[in-house]
Image (cartoon, rainbow, N blue to C red; front, side):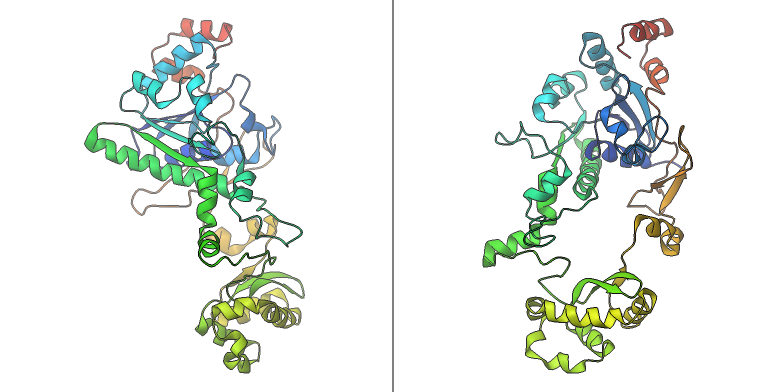
Amino acid sequence: MAKVLEGIRVLDFGRYIAGPFCAALLGDFGADVIRIDRIGGSEDRFVMPVTEGGEGAVFLQSNRNKRSLTLDIDCPQGREVAQRLIRTADVVVANMPPKTLANLGLDYESLCAVKPDIVLTASSAFGTHADAAHRVGFDGVGQAMSGAVYLSGMPNNPAKAMVPVVDFATAMSCALGTVMALYERRKSGKGQVVEGSLLQTALTFASGVLIEESVLSLDRQATGNRSPSYGPSDIFRTADGWIIAQVIGQSSFKRWAHMVGAPELIDDPRFSDDVSRGENGQILSEMMSQWCAARNRAEALDALEKAKIPAGPVYSPREALDDPVVRASKAFDWVDYPGLSRSAPIVLSPTTLSRTPPTIESRPPTIGEHTTEVLREVGYSDSEIAALRDLGVA
């Protein structure tokens, strides 16, 4: 079956998540993705190590469906190799500050001089405007600067998400932008720059509270897991574990009140609408906590499901892996990798298509695994490849 992006070549100069996972998503839909690794392996390869060789968990997730070519792009010979590769490419992915892109010859002007219709997908921490272009940052910085961390945790103990939600969301946004740029190129014959930033993604996530604060100046403070905008919406302890339940809207609140045996709350003016229920959410959370404490997790979730109230268990990573609903969803592709003691559950693309679905065709590459193969494709002879290796260029 033909893939959506079959025939599209992507050069992935990205590091960590925002760039590499963007490229991986393009690979899931059929693009030929070549990861450009540093000699000896790029730094993002070794974060959260899980293999004998030190490859990390997030590296495995973000680099399926790719080939790896090692290259020292800082030297003249490496630049020549890069330019040859660029001539064969449709997309360059590079999540670096603009100055770094320019220094490496990966800025849009330099790329267009080599391949006029190239698409450059360049995400950064804070964007390319003059006040921010020089700054570097990671996922947590974007979360913190958006206002989201301030409203998480408790007033004296801000809390960020411990999983890199901003990185992955930036990657997904950039993948969408890349596909749109390729689609537009079919009509215009021209490439363009696709930009994204961690901060812009984080601000998008926090947009509701930012708009609310701008308009109403409420100066909200953190309330832990309890929503300040409706209720009861919180994380609750049952006799044998934790659950989350979210009551939003009048009909949902009526069902909840009957479920907990307190129908008189429906006509209580303190709980007349979502705003009021949010303002008095601590009362509702305390009532729900008492109700949950008398039940085990399964009993509580069963009652909530019958009442049609959105709820779910708070899982540990092990429980998430073992959950029958998660397994039935076929969320994972179990991939073997050199040095792994057991297969790794690579999470499939979050978006699928009915006729041309994304697939994982190949495991993440080892360092420079395809260097010879790719260099031959762009015209290097075996003796030239050997000379590049002797120089430490490839």
